[in-house]
Image 1 (cartoon, one colour):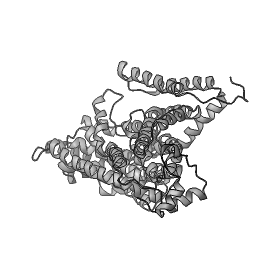
Image 2 (cartoon, helix red, strand yellow):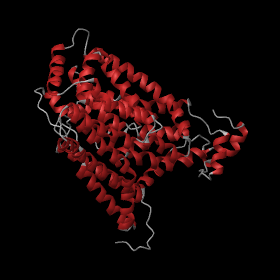
Image 3 (cartoon, helix red, strand yellow):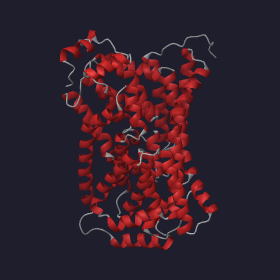
Image 4 (cartoon, rainbow, N blue to C red):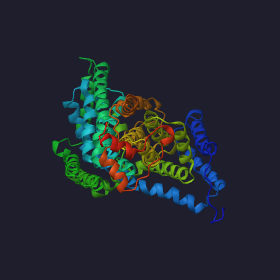
Length: 508
């Protein structure tokens, strides 16, 4: 073990790549050679490799352990949400809330517009709740059942759910990631949300059009199998009491969100309301409700798709996801503490000179951090801290950066299966990837809004559209808060404060 007085060395770019490349190689062997979608052990091996690199660089174990647990600690509120969402899924199925949502959805929604409606519904709920995970685990689960009734492939429904839920999370002032991005880049929360609209709104409109087109392509006029829908609604009615009153638990959660109550107690209120509904409407005992909340619900309705959808939930169902998140976050924390991620980012910055290049690099770095570290929080916080002085040195508003890290961080998280976001989506929506249903990974390219948004952002960077300079108020804020400003004069950039005065403080 290194002496406590030893000052750790910074890793070279080549050394910094070693734990990243070796971890991806082990992960590739697990996924593609062994055909086993369980990324826990490869990420744990990656954590160990990073630890060895840290020891070589002069880090003592206590220092690296602190880095690992500091990142894990930041994620604990989201792990708490996972636990409560697991309880909600089990209890809401048992109470008849999810079956009622599916039942009425099959009666009311048109199969042709189902995917577009799913995206809109999830977006609205996610904006209200401030949590994409809460939306996916509640409304998203019900929509998976409705999609099964319409014979829409699960990966199409999952793509629409993910598009809407993570779009809503990205623009909700209640979202933790939406608050984290402006915090690490030093901008105002509502300015940050407004600045994301030029990329998110076009992406959502294009996605909406694609889902409408897909709805008519998948379920043409007159092709709806009403006998199948009747079979599902009959099975639901035979196994549950179906009533509009059973939608009250969902209404309570949404109402609390609209009142801007904190997400965790709002979701737990949904658990309590669902438990009461299960005992009153479905005749469940308190002991059974406790079992549903812990171990999930079990049913044999005689319809394979419905049974696979409704046999789920409970805290224990989230343990696979939670364990993956904790290991992935530990790996990310070790990469950050040993300086490996910083060395990689600095190498990128040494090669990028233009604003368009830096904006593209910021989006790509957030995405790569998501890919390697498996943590959406680290993918926002680390590039946000590293790139901010460069943007200031260029005289560019750091609103550009806060938007970039949200696009590469929040929105790309659910598209990476071993990331915290992707692991949760796969688990909560019952995509069965672990059981061999790998075709359901098609939800990744079908989550149009998630990957269209950063592409639009890159186009704006290279065309100069919606890419503001720092105005006088922001320049004054940098001075007042003593923000770090990189000296970019060697690359042809004027002093931002002098340039700001010459522009008269106008943003362009």
